[in-house]
Length: 216
Image 1 (cartoon, helix red, strand yellow):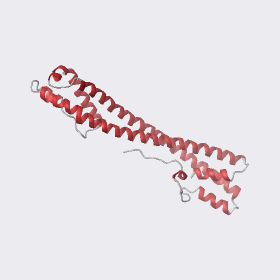
Image 2 (cartoon, rainbow, N blue to C red):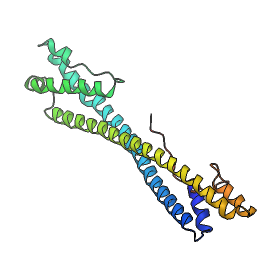
Image 3 (cartoon, rainbow, N blue to C red):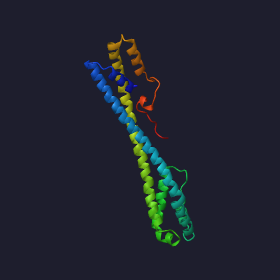
Image 4 (cartoon, one colour):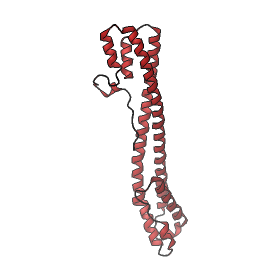
């Protein structure tokens, strides 16, 4: 709607100072809204990408590295019964932070018992791979948090900009009616421009910036 109003005023520009000032302010607000909409979408995209990446990393940790460590732990538990309880595979569908905490605990215990576990069939490289995998998993959690912060911040700012755009359009409505109120054709075009729904759209760009909801 704001883009259509801007385009209408550009097409029917007058020399009046109030109109010029009001149009300039509306153009600034539209530009600001477009930037914020881009930031909002970028936050959603980043958050979704991090979620997908995290799922891949977790499958590798759960299905390969931790499973291998658990199997070695069972063998070692024949000599040290306490090790059996220390190397239990985390729940497949547990919360991300709970999974990270459990996996780190297993890594710490395996590091402390490295010599024994290597002697029972654990690859020395496993602990390095597990360390790298957990670091990557944690990075995806931070990426999700950062994406959500960007989305939420941009959404709040965008709401404030939309409110100011509405006020500006109301001001421009008064100016247009004052200047062109006797011209039925122009007033019909103006009513269509300032309609929230507007005329039928030929492309997605007519609608202006999209407001994107965050991923669940």
